[in-house]
Length: 325
Ligand code: SF4
Image (spheres, rainbow, N blue to C red):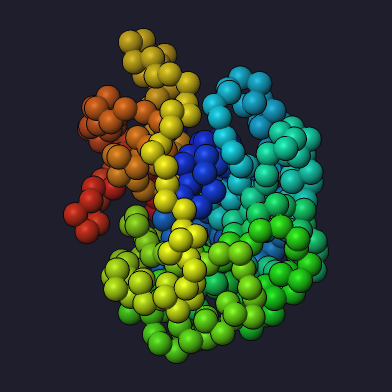
């Protein structure tokens, strides 16, 4: 059983921000223009700003077509993301077009760290989506470099300008994410600069978050609730009512057949595939995969025993993961 190359289609997973989201991985490996302290995928192996068809459109769309043909869980949105920065994939525009043909009527969302938005071609491709979820964690240069650890040539000032330009060009919904780490990008100066930026940008929503899973580097620590509340009050005074509380997880996956070896194998593969993407608690994994906790707990114990999965503790919660460096 290998987890080196998880499939390109993952989920659907329950996302607090989007609902039931079917994920597409546009990188297939940890390729990113940032090496964020908090990255739940692990340290960036290939730090780059070079756009390439890391996963060619034909390959990804072929996998999606196969998945749609063989599997029919419900989902509400298709989200382009993956193990790195999706805008690095130069086939992104073709992928969005292809998704629209394969699943007409389902909104397409793109997660982005915003690093390439100063490129007009990237903005044109992003404008094909329905929902954009760009990140902007810091507008103080020292804090930006400390939290996002960008590739050479990435400019915080260009990102700020590019996002404002994108807001003018994009007609869909934009949800800005600000992730705050304790002692890294939680200064009052950063908050004031972000507040001025949000006022100028006018996103449909601002999501202030912190890490909820183990990050790539040990110095990454979650911001305490009081800091998050302080940032929320300032950045998104309306957000308290706008924040989407995840609904009780629905059963998105086909029924678990635990009585056969095939059923167990399928479940193992889904668990390993999901954990290769990000560390998760037992309850988080159960909710994301739509599986009951008890058999999942037994399976995780078995995978731990075989060394296929590892576990770590963060603030009293046990997180399971695999395939991280
Ligand atoms: S959190 Fe996102 S932007 Fe940061 S290193 Fe990980 S994949 Fe890249």
